Every structure is written in C-alpha cells, then in structure tokens.
Image 1 (cartoon, rainbow, N blue to C red):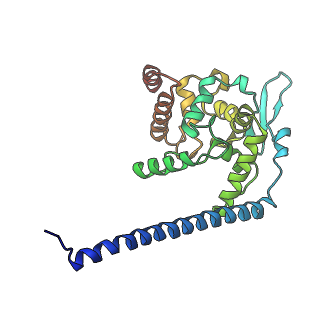
Image 2 (cartoon, rainbow, N blue to C red):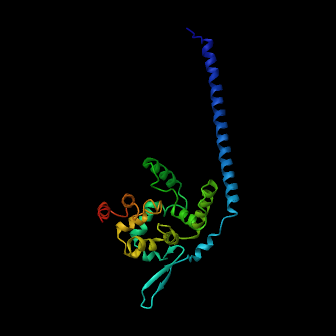
Image 3 (cartoon, rainbow, N blue to C red):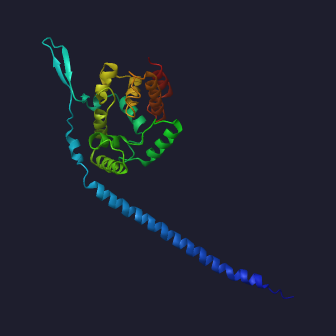
Length: 270
C-alpha cells in the first residue's frame, strides 16, 4: 500500500530549508551589528584617548619629589618652640614604615595593587556592590595609583572626562614607576586629616610617635582614614574610627596579611 503525503506535510518539508536560511541570515546580520558597535567603541575610545591626552601633565615631575615640609624653630637649649607649614608633612622612606602599615593601606585601599596596571575595573565593580550593601561609602573604587594621580595632578572636579584623564595618568605612572616607588609617593602624599599629610605626620599627630613605632592597631587606624579623614577621625569620632579600624583589620585577614588572632588582639587594644 503506497502512502501518499498530504499537502500540509509537503509544505512543512519545503518550509524547513527556508527557516534554516532565515536563521542563518539573522545570525549573520546580528554578528555584523555587534562587530560594528565593537569597532565603533574602539574608535571612540581611541579618539577620546588622544583628545584628552594632549593636555595632560607630564608624570616625569614625580621623579623629583620634594614637597613642602615643616619648618621647625628651636630655642637656644634645643627645645622646639614653633612649627611653620602649609601642609604638615614629614617625608620618610618606605624602610621607615612598618610592613604591616603598608599592608594595611593596600588591604583596605587597593587589594589588587600588585596585579593591576594602574586601573582596576574589577575593584570598581566590587566597591560599588560593597557600598550599595553598606548603604554608605566603605570602599573606594580608585586604585592607589589613581589616588596618586588625583593628589599630584588633578583638581577635585567630578566629571567623566576627569575620570578618564585619571585613568590615563594612572596607567602611565604604573608603566614608568615601580610599585615600591608608587607606594612611597602615596604614603608620603596622602591626606590623613587634621592638616597631616603622609603617614609620618599623621602618626605624630594622632599617636605622638614615629610611623616606624606604630603597632598593628594604630596602623589600621591610619589606613582607615583616606576614604574620609574627617568622618573617621579618632579625635572627633572615636566610635566611627573604631568601626573603620575593624574593617581594615578584617580586610588584612582576608588578604592573608594577618591572622584572626592578631586582628582580635589589635581590636582589643585600647
């Protein structure tokens, strides 16, 4: 007995090749559209880069770092009687800073400092999520290198063009300087509240001692200041400073710089 196909079956079979062709055309044109926008994005980025780069300052000035420092006046019996300064700053080498102080700043401000090239897009996204969860700014998206860029070269203006300039300069600084040199600039330049610039001046200001004498608890206090020196001032808001210190210590534990026991001991220091 011969089975004769119905007209509907014949039409369905003829329709299948047409459906395959249409699907291929849609995929082809979709890929072309995606490729077009990718190329457009690259071209736009290149144009923006060269447009904003032409007026950027030269980073070579960082090789001769001589900031304004404190002028001290002493009496005949060698007793200090006065200080004069525009910015209270005492420049010290990294060798005069405790390792745990440097690690505290890296853990809280830029955990991927040794991995990125001046700008860290992963950290920007992570900071956005953390701040959203906390309901306040607890973590910044700028890398340490970007903070150096802002401190030395750029105005406090908030705009997209400024952020792009900041990223370009940070990338150039990362290429031109070693990570240790960047840390040296950062830790001597950063504003830490109450007219103190750099970790040495801040250490003398808050604890009455040199940075190299700081313990872990004190290191965590200083490392918690860059995000908001006034808000986390141990003089004005000791409770907020303590909360920020705990955050820094937890970040140090998370990054493997200290143990939970060390963090707990530092938290309990009065």
